[in-house]
Length: 306
Image (cartoon, rainbow, N blue to C red; front, side, top):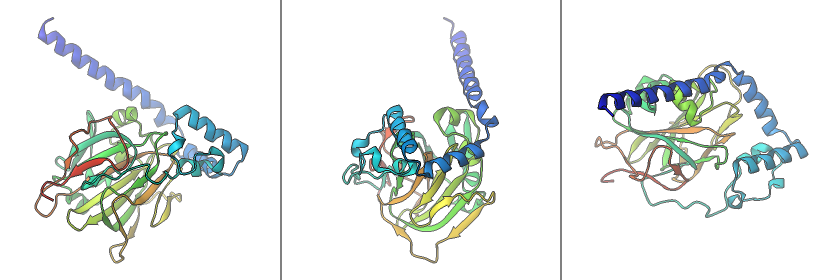
């Protein structure tokens, strides 16, 4: 087959795949996402007895949730769907690697790598700016020039508590209002700027050696709320305007592996790491690949020479 024909066919397949993804997400533009999310949140927090139990057992079957690793493996022990969804793990269920940055969640790698010209790769053909992700704060975004990012998607079956990839002193928390698109891989390929369009909670930390880093909890359709360990539930309320809390005059510190937050019905986390004082950025685990499965505590990255 002539080389030009092969290139033409490959290009046609890529265009067809992108068109398919866009068509797949088209209904999400039309759905009343806020109303659906509010309804789901009310149900997830309700003590509805047999209805709640039936929903929990159905969810376990559909998504093949491994209850053996849960601190309480009996579905009947959870009075609400939220209690089940944010279930704790048994002690020792996850081991923390001896590395500078550990994976903070169970999930699947969406994308990771260098922040180039202030932009983060979302999916092939899509990127977005650091500034838009953190709520328009250009000064904060500029700290991540030549830095690194990692995005991890939490599927419905995953453990949905979020832990610290490294030690950190909390400086700020910003709740950025936004849309509530799904964050599954198809939507990431089909909705431009997805993670900077959806509602999100931006947590800004400082490490004593590595400097500034950020962990962003990204909301999605049916995600009833997001919570942090120092604040509790951040949303609702959904005021429709950016809200910020400052902690730089306090001494809120969390150690690597500590729980820092949770999704009440899951979503995605995006992490940003600025270069250190020597201009060095972390190097990711060479075994990492987009779409690869990861678990809390596994090696994520190291700082060369740290």
